[in-house]
Image 1: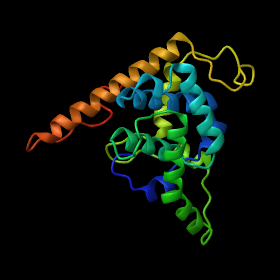
Image 2: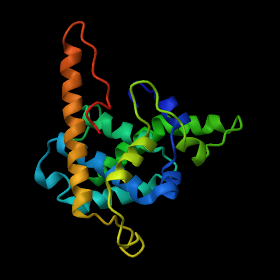
Image 3: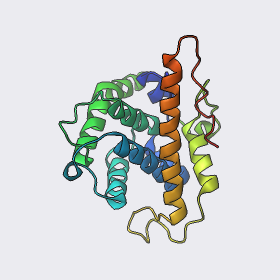
Image 4: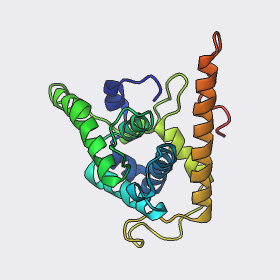
Length: 209
């Protein structure tokens, strides 16, 4: 997603509803991993943010329910915008604040692009998205899902049996923990490298295997 404009994220991204249809568990785990990363990066009072993993899962469920046509990449971009301090949080980082930020993003960017889409034929197919290569210096959301899927154990229960919640094993939580730590370290290293004259930032996927 690095260097992508909102229009490009909308044009080439995958709607949440299609991502859930392709792989519901891994899509939700990806969103949960990135939300956990955001939660740890933004410091607010304990009473003004999510209390535990279950409340974070509830937030992911709400995102999927309320924004089914928003692209997965757009949600991740919104998370990044919040993490970089470009969204006014008024001292809170909870589900209502996050949903309001997503509504603002959708209103500012996505709604306009959707209206323009009606003026020309355009169909976003899940199959085509699954084989879309990543841009230079980035990995696609599909690649991130595949990497998570390769490390996650098989589910023992369906989401329906769990009332719509993700069934997180100890290995799932370990994967999310490692993802948050690795991406945070990569961000820090890239920022330090960019600050040194004549130094090129490292490839985002280095060390993520």
